[in-house]
Image 1 (cartoon, one colour):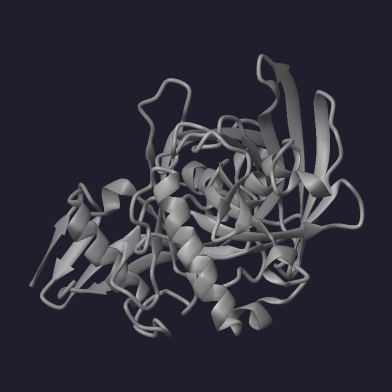
Image 2: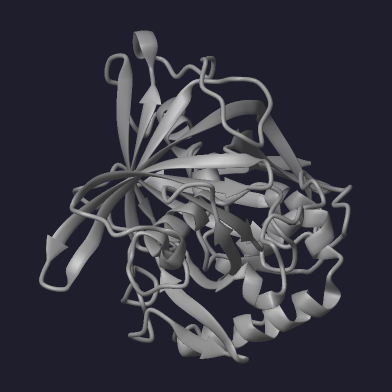
Length: 372
């Protein structure tokens, strides 16, 4: 026996819950996209459903959509926005592969890339000519990002010639314009009021720029900064020290006890070949990212262009205007155009833009065990 709850588009039987789902790759991440109305309004119930949907907690997530890695255990929840300057609201959820934990404190800029196409195809935003701008409010960080989606003939296209490092093949570009991603989580770009300070006798920069992060020069840990993720993940002493520093950083940034949170993110930095390049190793936080988070790249670029940070030693003095920054990561690089303006406190970043690609993998019904 079964009945249909048409308001939430959920079919409930004695065995399973069936709900609509769109599985997408966004940038270098992957996960299911849901309309908020498809999910329970009660947060604990929603989180139990998401854990079951992804197959967590299990290191391989074999009983769900997850891929046994934090990069493939992400969820995007989208709804029509009530804000006059935004079209849709986007709530990101990081589902732990091996713990019964759903964290909605961070943001994911890679999954963000799929929000625009998803919103258009679900009827939340009307396509406008060859390109459609979707104004997105990120609920996690309280920031606005504009996504420019390719819509030739009034329909979303995923085919194109754009490529990003960390993903094979090409696809249509999605341009992401970060408009107010600075200090939105903690209230300040530099929550402690310092651009550089000491934790465990190491110089760090604690920054809230698209994502709360703790940045440290790789050389201060005896590293080159160009090590690959597998090598860094085997360095248990370094990982333990980095985690203890991250927890202290969380307290200093006003985030409280972050042992069960993925923010702030630890980042190791080293110089690139030019003063427009910087090398980053971004942690998720237990493992080194095999490529790089988009939000993390925005934060790295912000620190890189801001005098007095641990990243600025690899840069050069800047003037107001648009600056092109390349953030190198284990799979390649991310190119970012950053706008600097002059104000009472000197130079500050007003916007940052980059390109991601998206692919819709599957659209259909997801079955979740009723025990969830």
